[in-house]
Each structure stands twice: as structure tokens, then as C-alpha cells.
Image (cartoon, rainbow, N blue to C red):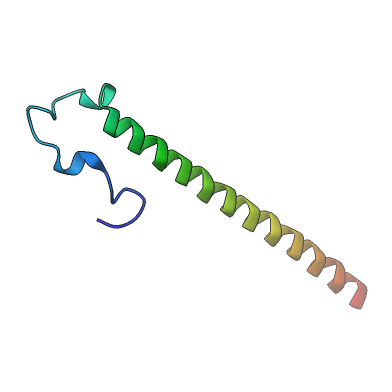
Length: 69
């Protein structure tokens, strides 16, 4: 499995280690989840910057078009 969840340590975890509720006390899962959340935050920041840049560029285009009329 590729992508942000591709290296999930739980995908090969089997009983008795894997059981209902094991995510609450599994250090491997906790560490992996922190990394995933950091990557998600970075992706969200990059998207926000891209949207902000797009809105600035669109605003400039509108101003240029108004001046041409």
C-alpha cells in the first residue's frame, strides 16, 4: 500500500499482540500516528499556501482586466 498510510505498523500485527483496543496502548502505533499527523499538517500547509497564492494571482488578474476596459 502506497501513500501516507503505507507504512502502518498495524497491517502485519497479529494476535495476541493485536486485539480490540490495542491502539490505545501500542507505542509503535502512537509513534506512527504522530508521523502521519505531521505529514498531514505539512500537506495542509502546502495546500493553504497554494490556495492563498491562487487567490492573490486571481485578484491581480481582476485588477489588470479592470484597467484594460
